[in-house]
Length: 311
Image (cartoon, rainbow, N blue to C red):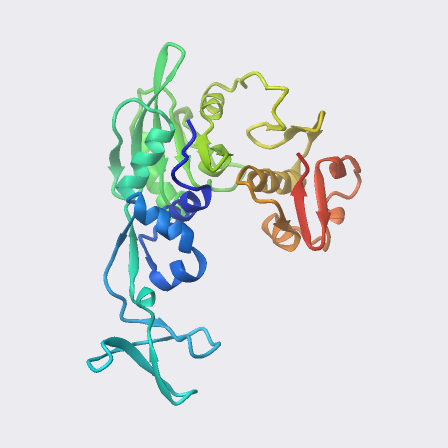
């Protein structure tokens, strides 16, 4: 089911805050970088206004520093003195604001996207929720939502709780990002899935790929729609596009996964240097990353410092 009222970028902002454990954001950051997303999240109850900030960015210099404004009774505004310019500077009202993330609202939203039975309930304070039950054939499995999952202290706490919960069918743990490593696994056969992989752009909104959730739990892939412009396996080792099937491993596989997710978010292009850095490649160009094969050019376009999925 597509969500047409909240943009994918707005959801990404809320999900990033949820993942990091950050529950408030400065109004200046919203005004400068996330104005549209902040307004959407406010309108739909994901953001609430927090306390008035006592430290704001110094907008009279190009330095990254902050100042503490003072209330001016005569002007009815907050101000700070700019020593560089030699006069008082009015502080924009937005710089004084802070916004709080409504975690419960976001948890409920992810529950609704997954179309789960039973209401969510918290298991570990601000770290782990039982989102509800997912029906698979003739059985039901628990779906969990983990926070700060890539932080090892949080991962260890979540692991220990799941280990104590024996006697249940293997469930699924959703998280915005997953911990990396060849030997990282969960007890009792529980599986993990990144929400970044499972959230799919659709028109002006997005939806959760319920087929992917079931595939992770059963190991069975649903039939591929040959009319869809792009399909990929859960681990991005296999990608089908433009009438061809591509198989990638290692850092090439990681790069393709990043570009596919960007394509699904509706982002036309991805900065090449950022891509190479994110996969830990020492290559100076994307052609060096894919050295030894030529078919990748049928899937990936590149030029002017950017690259993208051709689908």
